[in-house]
Amino acid sequence: MKRIVLAMICAIYGISMSAQTSPNGRIKAEKFNDHITVSYKQNGKWQEIYTAEFEGISGGDTRSIKEDYHMLTGKRSHCVNKGKESVYSLHSGGVLYVRVYNDGVAFRKVGRASMNDKAETPVAINIPYYINSWIMNWSDGAEGFYPKNRQMKQGDRLSFPALFEFPNNVFALLTEADIRHDQAASSFYSVDGKNTFNIKHDQNEQEAHQSSWKVMMIGSLADVVESTLVTDVSEPCKLKDTSWIEPGVVSWVYWAYNHGSNDYNIIKKYVDFAATIGLPYVLIDAEWDEMKDGKSVVDAVNYAKEKGVKPMIWYNSSVGWVNGAPGPKYRLNKEEDREKEFAWCESIGVAGVKIDFFSGDNNMNMAYCIDLMESCAKHHLLCNFHGATIPRGWMRTYPNLMSTEGVYGAEWYNNVPTFTNRAAAHNATLPYTRNVIGSMDYTPCAFSDSQHPHITSHAHELALTALYESGLQHLADRPESFLAQPQEVKNYLGELPAAWDETVFLGGYPAESAIIARRSGTTWYIAGINGTDQEQTLTFSTKRLKGLGKYVTQFQDSGDKNKPWDITRGNTVETVQKCQPRGGFVIVVKK
Image 1 (tube, rainbow, N blue to C red):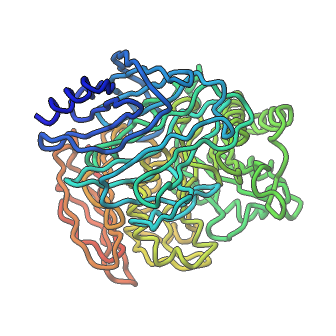
Image 2: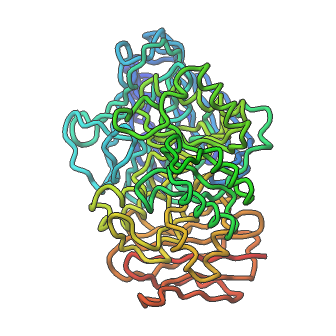
Image 3: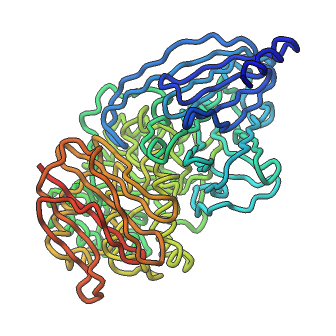
């Protein structure tokens, strides 16, 4: 009845109203004059999620959208989406595209003369009825915590992704996707310290003819965590040949030594470790251009290849932290230098590059990243961006981009003492925030300590390797620590996939716990962590796990510091898990 009255009022006073509903009928985007209001249907009632304000819109032609594509990394190998798209004219010029999918809404402006920060009108969004939020302050490298119900003030710059909770267990995750060469990325700003935000692109000296997609995934926590909306709206794969691209687990030197890779003998230890347990990759980190004892990076690369381990090497992007930072520097900034360097990498047998220390979301950084990905692809090099902004769907367009940092990860045990006490809750927040939007180079799994100690359990640390998705999964700990673990743990790490055919959210709540199941081929990995300082019993169901086998290996905490592991084999998945404070579990189920 209320909607009929509203329609009559709109007709009497000339208010423009149109609506587009998702294929499953759960999400709706309505146009009221210059606003698009997005609502979610729960228990037969519509619940407002947000309203976006534009500078005059009219029209609303619609079409259906259906896509079917494959991913080499991410939550699932085969992605299918359906949606409906409305096209509105903007009175200031150009058009507005609004897409409604079963798991969220996306909008983009196209056709303006310029989308840079000087000419663009920010998009104001109002999120009126949320009851909890997890939002990170903006920084160049998107490294920070996601505190619950952050105290915001007018003008605060905030980072994507941002998670909001609404009544009746409805959640929404705000982010963006599909950054092109002429675009800057965007962030959002608090207008009133409460419910209203301005989305604004960063600095851009080019004339961009469209904005990025502003994306909000909506529904239950499972809907959000399992969503592929970021890649759904991104540009399809540009590479003709992807047969050379192989995700994998990486042996990584930095965490243990808080230093790079200028010591050939230390590099050999990490290569030997990778060869011993069967890891496909080793990363030769910063400072390889200053190798000691008469050795060179070519010696290290050749040693890795002799051992059957694929070497990757590190570069400074030379646009962020340069002065006082490690090298090699200034080898990638100019096209001719970049092509020469990557051709050399290919010629000596380097499998990929990790590029570090970018400087934010402006167009210079975005265009540079795209140039790097394209140049890497020419020379069959995998690519990993570190010290970089969050992913925005490039892994579909350039599948040689295997992972991106953009996260407050385990390397921060090297830098500050604050990570120790907050890591467990932070770790249990990332599956609902940062890792939803793309591969996350958190660098998980440390059983020993670095510069600052960790207080998460052994099973918690092991669980992160399957709980977190990353096309290159860098293992943090030192070889001696890994090799001292039970054989079952070493076997687990040597068999661990870094790409998944399917991802299923099984339970949890931000900062408290997370349980996720991922499938590779016929093997399921079920990983769960306790983010609290109290013992917690985690329960889940396996009903959604198709083709579940009966050869079960379970990794739990024993509670004994001297013998920390409780590893069992059987043919039944234990769906009730008693977790130690800051503990966890991993269950591997094979056919």
